[in-house]
Length: 126
Image 1 (tube, helix red, strand yellow):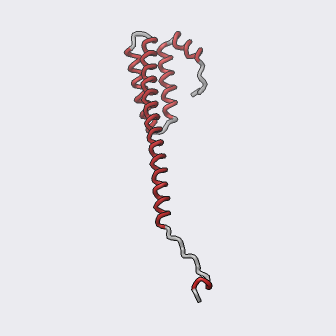
Image 2 (cartoon, one colour; image 1 turned 180 degrees about the vertical axis):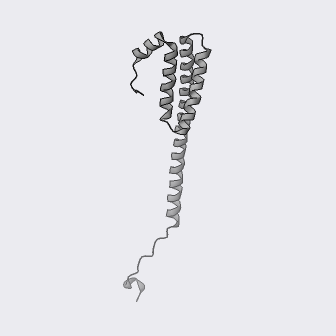
Image 3 (tube, rainbow, N blue to C red; image 1 turned 45 degrees about the vertical axis):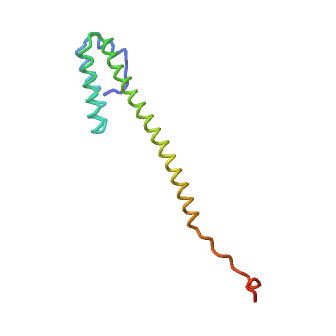
């Protein structure tokens, strides 16, 4: 399958033959998913079902676009929340690591007993 996307070609096909457009769209989606891992393929098919549902449910292409755009916004908001949470966890982990390192350094210093200095013959008194 050709990987170059030609918008004008797709738009012309949609105008001339909506059935051929839909068949080509499904073929392009399947070709894309076929190049994915098994897990990604399953997630992609699930997402595509949701997109197709929104397209069928919409009264117009504009409504379908708005519904799909909302799905994208919702997913982006979720990913942003997850990124903020991950960042907070990393900051907490860094602080905890620094705190533990300081405690270990202090404990190691407290345990270290200095070796006695050798005494010279003169200081023994004889």
